[in-house]
Length: 286
Length: 286
Image 1 (cartoon, each protein chain N blue to C red):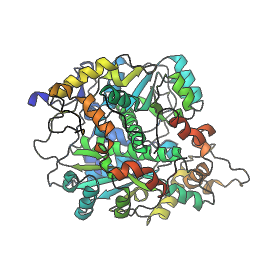
Image 2 (cartoon, each protein chain N blue to C red; image 1 turned 45 degrees about the vertical axis):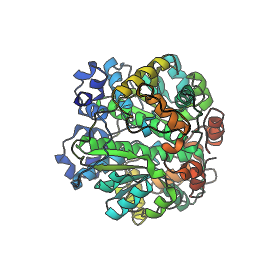
Image 3 (tube, helix red, strand yellow; image 1 turned 90 degrees about the vertical axis):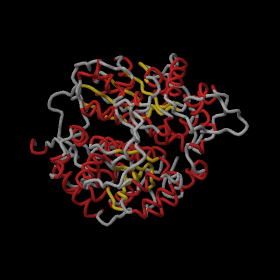
Image 4 (spheres, rainbow over the protein chains, first blue to last red; image 1 turned 120 degrees about the vertical axis):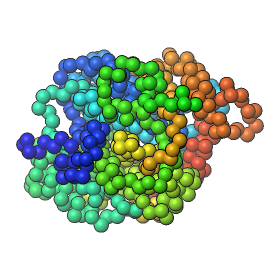
């Protein structure tokens, strides 16, 4: 279905006014597509340096830099992390797997080092550190794509937090929030960028509005069905009849995932125990 | 101190191997500097379109798109949000203030619309939605900087969650995670990019290590003191003697912020009540 291969979101959505801007960066951002199959070619050292430097240049709340990045290149460790992250083979294939951690261990260390008591045991600090790690991951992703590499963020690194803590020697106050598999893509894996919900659904003027929600959802469902996005990827619901192709779009797929959240977060232990695990590992949610 | 104005992190840190890569995008990412003073020039419509399209192109966990963006241009609303966000004047000045929200309202709506029960009341879903909003914000920031605009993320939008919920008409399941003020910078506001902790402190090979932590912290303190980063910006601690310039670097500043977290999150209500407020507004932390 080569007519579904769009290089940039501007082309997919028929936004023509951007053509004059001629920004390589805007082109990179709007042509993001997750790549989940890599060939064996290694990443040049200065490419990895550029990716890491880009990550470290991301904004960080109050310059606290409450994150750490673990660079995983050893096949053994990649194999283990693949197994713990929903058994996803592309983690084994990728020459480099970066693990982005929320890190308040360093802040606690520095606070005690200077002779003070750490008072950051709060939901706010958990959130701030998780955001810092997310920001560095996104910069690493954008840098990778700018260099012609393929990449995919891996949220399922949260499936087995305790095993990942042990594998990566994470001290209390550090947990693996999201991974990033990076490499050269296998030929033929690109499907074209994935359509997003229409702008009128996710972007609001001056205040939140659901005025265009139903119209937008219907159009998006039609678009995703036409693209055959969910063929062979349906979420099954016990006791529910199969719906036909026209009825199984983003709304049905998303609703089934939200009523069976283990289809998002593959490990039941994650859903039920994430907070308890993180609380026992140095984070607080007060 | 014009000798402290570095255009890119590669120059600041003396990384020369990247010179061959010649990527505009890497240059944009590694020259990020927060801009907190704007002139009155408006942002062209197609620039804003490119920024929004870039934001919508960010990766999103399981394609759930659990975020919303509120575009705020009205002076009255910008004034109110500035007041609620630590009284920061640059929000009033910026021609556009984007508010990035974690949004599980839409997921609940869609789940019920399809006839299912929403089972995503969990810390994982809160985190996933907050990450989705963070990813879109970072793409909007990078796009803005690629277009020659200045911008700064605004975490203090979390200072007064209830007032922001009312101002932006946010339904249950939607909260304002981070803002982004965008505009053309006032002349002379650039100080050069801010040094970051050395790579050996924040980036680890194969597993977490504190081997280079002390050495890295000492070097960073010297660098930040030489740059006069904290002059006139010290955090005061009741009963503590003033430390001299050499002793007041990133470690001391960060330690004081972590022992007085209200200096990060300006509102005491935020620190103590964020979880309770969000729980009463449709989020769960189970």
